[in-house]
Length: 443
Image (cartoon, rainbow, N blue to C red; front, side, top):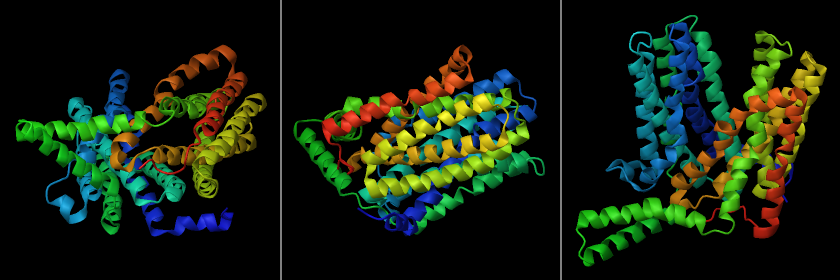
C-alpha cells in the first residue's frame, strides 16, 4: 500500500495538473446561465416570472447524454487526423462556447429577452458538450489508479471556475458594463483551449476496435443488399447508441449501480438546497454568510477534494467511497449542532469547514467511481448517462427538502440529511461483497 506522501505526488504529474485547468474551463460557464445571469436580469428589471423561466436554459446539462453518442463516434473531418478525435471536438465546443458567452453578454435582456434566452441556451448546450469531451478526455488520459487524483483536480478546478463566474463576475459588474463582464468570462475559456493544445490525444485502443467492428458491420449490411448510406446509418446507430447501453446492462449488478448513484449524494443535495435559508433564519447576515461560506467553504472543499484523491489513490475507489461517505454522513450532524447553538460564527466556521471538507472528499471519490464504470470504448456516452443519474438527487429530491424542514424543524432536518445517507452506504457494502467490484475501467 502506498504511503500518503507517495500518493500525494500524483498531483504534480503534468497530465493531472492539466485536468485542473480543464475543470476550470468546465465550471466557468455554469453560473453565467444560472446565478450570475439571474442577478443581471434582476438588475435590468426583468420580472421574477421571466427570470424563473430562464432556469430552463440549463436543460442541456441534464440531457447531454442524448448527443454524447454522436460525439463518441463521429470524427471531425481533417481536424481529427491533425490533433485527434477528443481534442478536435473539445476545441470546437470551446470556440462555440466562447462566442456564445460573448453573444449572451451583448444581448439586451430588458428589450429582447428572447435573444438573451437563445444565447443562454447556446451557452448551456456548448458548455454541456464541452463537459462531455472533458470527462471523456480525463478518463482516457489517466490510468485507473490516477482517476481519483484526476477527479480531485477536476472538481477543484470546476469550483474555481464557478467562483470566477459567480462572485468575481458580479463584483466586476459594479465597475464595468455587463457586455464587458461576459466578454472577459468568455475569454477565460481560452485557458481550456490552451490546455487541450498543450496535451496529447489519449490513446484509446478500445474505441479503435469499435470503429473496426462498425466498419465490418457496415460492409456486411451492404453485402446483404442495403444501400451504403443506410448500412452506414444502421452500423453507426448500433455502435453509438445500442452498444454503450447494452454494454452497461450486461455487467453484474448494473441496476444496483444506478440505484447507488442516485442515493449516494442525496443527503448532501438536500442539505445544500436548504443551507442558505437556514443561515438566514437563525440570524446570520448576508455579509457573514458570504464571508464564511465563500472563504472557508471554498478552501475546505478544495482541501477535501485533494484528500479524497489521495484516499482513492491509496485505498482504491470502492473503499474510498465507503470511507468518504461515512465521514460526510457524520459531518452533516454539525449542522444539527449549529441549529441548536443558533447564531454563532465560530460554530458556523466549524460546520461549514467540516461539511465541505468531507463533501469534497466524497465528491472526488464519487466522480472517480463514475469514471471507473465507463468502458473506454464508449466513454463519453456512458459517463454522460451516469452523470445524468447523479443529477437526480439535486433536481428532484432536493425539491422536497423545504417541505421536510418545515415539518420537523432544522435540527431534525439535518439529522434526517445525515441518516438518509445510510442506505447508500449499506448498499455499497453489499455491492462490494456481492459483486467484488474492481477499481479498473471495464474496458
